[in-house]
Amino acid sequence: MTTWQIRQSFGGDDREALDEFHRRAWGGPIVVAHDEAIDLRTLPALVAHDADGKLAGALCWRVDGDALEVVSIAAAASGHGVGTALMDAVVAEARAAGSRRVWLVTTNDNLRALRFYQRRGLRIVGVDAGAVDRARLMKPSIPTVGDNGVPIHDELRLELSIEGQ
Image 1 (spheres, rainbow, N blue to C red):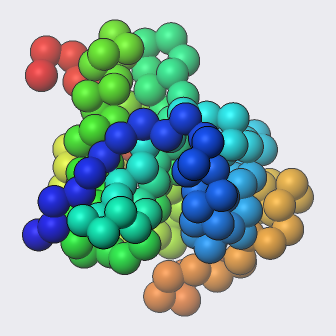
Image 2 (image 1 turned 45 degrees about the vertical axis):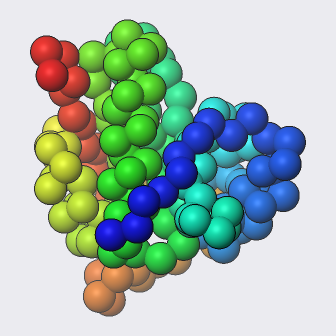
């Protein structure tokens, strides 16, 4: 497993690389979740770089009350530990911000993400039936069929309690 250099990105030198990374991962800087269009360029980001300084992953988040929401997480290549490193780093950010929990949403088709999050202690705490169907009204480029040929309709909310950990 590779050791990643994880740091906060404040735009600047990272902006162009981060924008291109989000374009490849999400089709641009706008993601739609829980009936909201969110511009990733307005959020704090953690970036992961490999030993050569190449951008290997990024995570954008926001804090609201007692919770830190992971709005976007993506790795250039899966299975190399960058997602785990980013999640560990954002949990540390959550603790520093005084958050009691970390939460995020993923789609019903994303079995790989569900496995990834649950193996890291997040639990499914809610399902918003039809959320992705509604999201397509704001971002028509969201596909109708995802991983393994599964139709995409719903958002699943996952949460990790970090109180007392």
